[in-house]
Each structure stands twice: as structure tokens, then as C-alpha cells.
Image 1 (cartoon, helix red, strand yellow):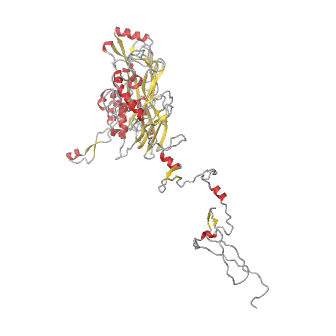
Image 2 (cartoon, one colour):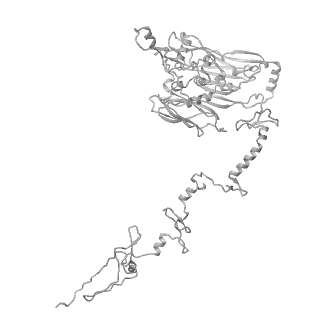
Image 3 (cartoon, rainbow, N blue to C red):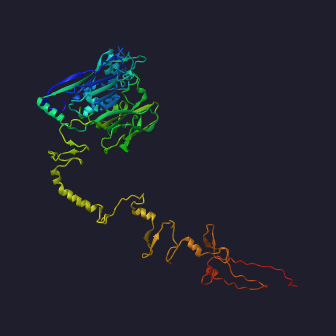
Length: 640
């Protein structure tokens, strides 16, 4: 028995519980099997119970036809306690098979795994020949033996299951209730005084229960008997009195357990995408993604308990915007470039095999590539999703190429469930707000803390008190602390690695300041003169100058230095940009009128033109002289 002292137990016996009412037709494809356990005065350890199913394939003589792994007998299972639905699971056979691949190992096949009719397929085929021959039959024996090779397409699991079901033999499938329902896996205690009901819906599609290479033949599956075997426990008188007194005390606590679930996407055909995952629990422990071609379902010639890698190249899960894994999975199923070790190791970690074996699982890494490419996501290590309903979960993926066949993703997860309050056993008192109440009692014999979240003992705190005080003083010396006025005091230290500001109230680093603001520089050639370097950036929005040393803007200069560039004596003119430039093509002097001829005239330069002469009256630039002759008609001829 589980976690019970044998001295407390006087007697244990397994009782067979039958289906409510009568099964009219054991060969009928769809019907509900209901078990109502009304032995309310008995103490029953449901976690150690079993459901036993008798199955046989009709009209099967020596055909290569058998049940798929787990038999796929039921499409839904429901657990009710006290009239409340505690757990409901769809496609339980597929869920059981997926989780069995992680829970069991090859050295465990001979007990619960095989009782559950789990003989994993070793190839995606219905080939039952372990060896193959390549050569001519007329060769000599030594040569013939050398040409006998291992058949890579041999499906050992299919062969084993065929041997169990051939000739329409009756096959028994025994499934532990703790594997059927997560509630009984986590709540392994006696239950009494309450009605418990189980409901199992039979699979209506026979071709989804079978796998065969026989074409155009219709088979039927018969289920002549289904029973529940439950351990009824009788405690010794002393313990029984305490147990009954405890039940009458009306003490209770909230029960939590992890339940496996399954969701399926719609039929897909694109090479990439993102789909929502609808889960109802507040907390998700883990998620398994199972890629599979649609054609495998409801087709007895396609093995629906084998999966397809779809040539995935990357995928990830996000739960409320938290990505798992942090950088996503980078995958390759291409020959010579295989890369799926990380998902396989995560698969082992999620299951852990702490119950049945030390390590390992039913599938090896090479089988994970072609037969069971299950993509695991461990979401157990995350910030708690408190009071969150209908978590926002999305699965994203990329394929190497657009697939030729339609596919879908099965999403199998482990949800953290909370149920009605029940017997707390021995432990803390749980308050209504979810906290533990020690009721002013001491917590004794606590081990020394290891992890950061472990509770600390008094000796641990006392031994580290001085170190804590020293660390606090050091931290105060090197950290930004509040001054007496409430500001942060950097204690004359540099604050480094400051990112460029984004918002108005962000702190500014030196690099950003120098690139975007006027900086005060020291001129190398004139050490005592300081100036602002604008780095060729225009200086905008200057106000009108008030003092003689104020900077002036262009408009002010233009208004104060207006020049009529049309006057002939101007030494400046305007270019096409409207700027004033030296007038090098025309030099104006004063005007003289010639009355007689010949004559010598003296040119007097005005103050503008004289600026072009050096002190020794030499030209500093090229000058042009403009001479204008005015002719008029005379009444006499001077040469006559």
C-alpha cells in the first residue's frame, strides 16, 4: 500500500466494481460506461485502483492487424466526486501513450506498460519480418548467410501486439487509475463517506483503434467486459477511532493536483504560423507539442500513435508574453544536420521518472527524430500567474518547406488544478486566504537552508548576522542612497554605462550631450579664450540682441547692412542665394564731361574705390575702367 504504515492496516482486499446497469451490446461502437462507487462507509484507496478492459478483434484469423498502443478504446474519461466534476480528459489513450513514453523505461516494459498494452512502434510500418535478404537464392550457404540483413522497417511493437490479438484472442488491458486521472496521482489518501463516479466514453471509430496492412476489409472490435478493481482498506481499531474522529472534526484544506490534458489545432498547411492554445487552468506546469499528419487519424492503414517531425526548423511557446525556451528551439531533422538533442533532454527533465526508474524513458534520441518528435516546454519555473483566468498561450513554428500533406498539432499539457477541500492529514493549518497558520507554535527540526527561497533556522541567522551588517555597510558605501532630503546621493562617484535617453525625463550621458548640445571648448591656440563649438549645426531661434556683446541673427544683420546693389559705386552685390559678395566686375569713379579735345583728366577715387589700393597706391585686385562718350551734333566744322 502507498504511504501507509502496515501496522495501521488490519486488512486490504480488492473489490471488483461492475458497470452501472447492463451493457446491451458489447460490440456497439459508441456507448458510455459508468461506475458509481456508493460504498460510502468503506475506506477506499482509489490511487491504487485499476480499470480492466477485455478487448478482442472480431473476424481476425492470421491477418496482420492489431490494436494501436493503449488500444485507443475510449475517447473521453470523467471523474466526479460528491457530484462535482473533478477531472475530464479527452482522447485519454493518446495522452496516456505520450506520457507513458516519458514515465516508463525499457526495463519497465514487463509490468504496467505492457499491462496497458503499450508496445512502442519501432518503425512507421506494419512490417513483421525482423530480417531481410538481398541476393540470389541459388547462392551457396556461406554467401547466403552474409546477405541476410537486419530489416530497418521491422516494427517490433506492431509484431508483439499482433501476436497478442491474432485469432480474435481476448486481450486484457489494465490501466492504473493514478495514470488515468492526475487527481489520484497526487492525492494518495483514503477516501470515505463520499460518492465517487467514473464515466468512460467508448471510441465510436473502429478504424481509429486498429492498425493493419490489410486493405478493403472491415473489422469489428468487441469489449465484452469492463470492471473497476479498487482496494478497500480496514484500519485497526485504534487507528480507525482516530481516523473517524478526524473526519468528524470538519477540518479541511484545499487540494491541488496536476492533470494531463489534450488540445488539438485545426488542419494546417502553411510553412509557418502562430496558433492560440486554449487551456483553462490558472497554472500550466508543462506543455508537449505533438506534430502529426492529418491522414493518420481514422485510417487503419496509417499508424496514429506515430508522429511526424514535419521538418520543423524552429518553434516556441509564449505564456502571457513569456517565451519558452527564452530563445526558442532551433531544430533540424534533415539527414546529416540532425539537431533535436535539447528538446529530448527537456522531455526527460519534465518527466524525471522519479516514481518508476532512476533515469531514461521508453524512447531513445534516434526514435525522437522520426517516430516520436515530441516538443516539450517546461513552464514550471515561471512567475506565478495569480488570479489569471484563461491564460494567453500561443505556439509559433517554422517548417523548412511548405508541406505536401495537411498536418495538425496536438497540445498535451499538465495543468495545476484546485479542487474541493478535503482531509488535510497532519500538517499546517491552511487559512482561507491561502496562507499557513502556525498558531503560535514553533517549527522544529528544520534543516539548514540551501536555496534562496528556503526557510532559515535561528542558528543560520545568528551566524550570519555580523556578515549581514557588514554587507549592508558596504552596500551603502557603493550604492545610490537617499539623502536626508529624499534625493539620490551618488557620493561623488561616476554613474557609468548610461544608455542614450528616449523619454524627456531620462538621464543624459556625456556622449549624447556633446553630440546634441553647445559644449564649452578651450581653443588650443588661445589657451585663455573659450568658445562654444556648434559642430556646423545651425543655431536657431536667437532673440534680438540687447547688449553689444549679444549674438545676432541673419535678419538683424540684413536689416542693419542694407546695400542697394543697383548703385554703380557699390563694391558688393548679391548672388542667386541672396548673399552679399564682392563686386569684382565693375569699379565706379566720378563722372567728367569732356568739352574740348585733346585734354588730360585726373581721376579721383572715392572712399569705396580707394579701399582697393594699397598704401603705395598700387592695385590690390584687378580693376576695370569704364569710359562713356556722349556725342552731340555741332553747328560748325573746326577743321575748315
